Amino acid sequence: MKTIILAAGEGTRLRPYTLDCPKCLVELGGKPLLIHQVEILKKSGIQDITIVTGYCANKIKALGYKTCHNPNYQVTNMVATLMCANELLDGNEDVLIAYGDILYEPRIVQELLNCNDPLCTSVDLNWLRLWKLRMQDPLIGAETMKFDAAGYIIELGRKPQSYEEIQGQYMGLIKVNADMAPRLVEVYEKLNSHCLYGGHTKQNMYMTSFLQYLIDHGYPVRAVLVKGGWLEVDTVNDLYLYRTLYSEGKLNELCNIFS
Figure 1 (cartoon, rainbow, N blue to C red):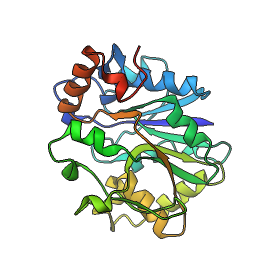
Figure 2 (cartoon, one colour):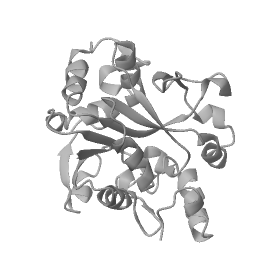
Figure 3 (spheres, rainbow, N blue to C red):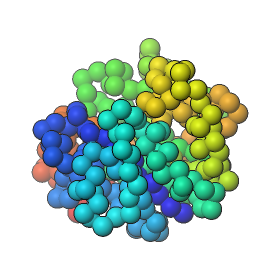
Figure 4 (cartoon, rainbow, N blue to C red):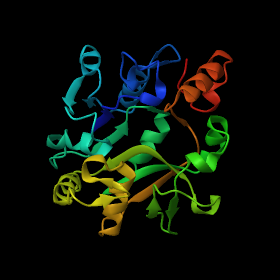
């Protein structure tokens, strides 16, 4: 098992904290998000970890981690960043793909590792609790998530019109088995650069749009259902909220990883 952490973005919604460092190096609970995440992965038995860098790449390299680089980070998005590490999707090992701005309890990783489907992703059933803390109108900041009775995702990543369209929330954690990993590269390379996917070009498509494309073209994606136990640090308001909860000794109620 190896992990690819996607950490190329500029983190503009976290300005001024990201003026001179990448989003994944913003500190919470006494250490950068990236170090928290690497520690959690290692506790889960995953030692082979590669960070895909972009903005302020040298600051991540200075920490001594294995890295790949997305030189076009300013004009691309998550899927293009992942494809900068396509040599790791070679079919030799299962791969865990993680966003660089999330934190999660080890149990979340274990649930993914226990899933034997070729392609699966963590889905938070208790998402509304976290979203209500993070934003005034959770519906505005949420995305659709629909899965069938067998637990396979039907739809994700679209703008919801009502809470009925949200059975859970995508978390930014994906597990791909060894046989499926090269397929991701093959499917991406065949996408038309002149078409839109979820409203974005191939170069700028979101990971949820890529997963939806895979689903629509016959690649099932299993929803691994969890209840809380994670954080997304996307905005200054998020950071302020979590730091306040940490100072009050309450952050572990959301994500129990802070000493």
